[in-house]
Length: 412
Image (cartoon, rainbow, N blue to C red):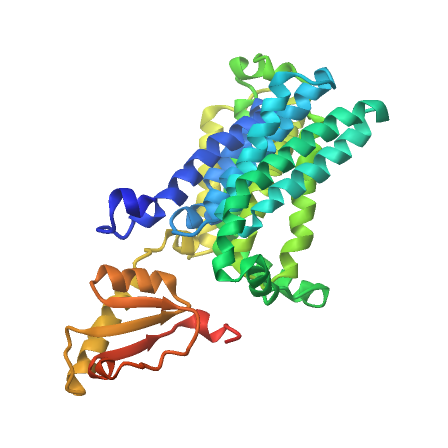
């Protein structure tokens, strides 16, 4: 839609949905953290997410991970609000029913965004069911089950048009067959986990760890602010049970499921969302304990000095602290596209063909296809290698197959 609205004149336009979704996820994280464990937890979780290298990295891409995370977090948050309302009265009321409808709607939109969007339903059903068994008597459980059914039904109804649109491509079975090739199973679980840990460290590393410590110091100071500690939310119980159950379901489920698949780093992006949420809760608890131990508030000067020492010490430990992948320019694929255009035109001239009329089939590199198209090259994305020209007239046009590192990993 960003291309439809703004055109394709600028290379940053396809990244608009990811950027906006990543920005809106931060206040959403603050809101759900605040409702689950108080204002300090919400502030800490939002700050950790905003400074998370992986979150920043995928906000700058034209991938679907950031949008998926926004819909997934919003869907689970609305389900958590529904549970809070059912705690007050485990019967039918219009407000919790509408929360269930909205939660299902967001889950369906997440499912439209990416095939793994159904994870919202898995988190909600498993987490809420565990909370319900712990919270309710069996005769009261029926209303929780009805509301869960509403969430699932609405999500499926929202997703059904996409399901039927797949018939022209062989139906969902063809999609499932494609997904199956990325499943490594339990035999490859440990290897996939090791690779994911390594890649996440390279993308996050020491800077993320220093950020967590720095944010712990800042939220420790925030806990001393009278307006914050006196707010109505701060007077609520320290942990909301349904939020903890949903968070545990999200964290444990993804921690077990992600290594079952080929270790693409982007699979871990939704996992980071719940990690930031849980870290916010942990930091708020630590801040409360420190407050009772230290008695005297930390001065702003001491806080500033602590943050400077952290940053300077981290720079000494890691000279490439600010040279992480997150902060590097994202123009290298555009530069590669320019080089490809120059090379294809040169080759076409050497073969006695027109340098202004070249055809580029791009296999496995959608970003490269986009940048070639932006250079007015006649390019087409392909998912197969049966590209022999059947029209004799096409033999007069220089035709190229462009591949990259993704093609080397393809089973085709």
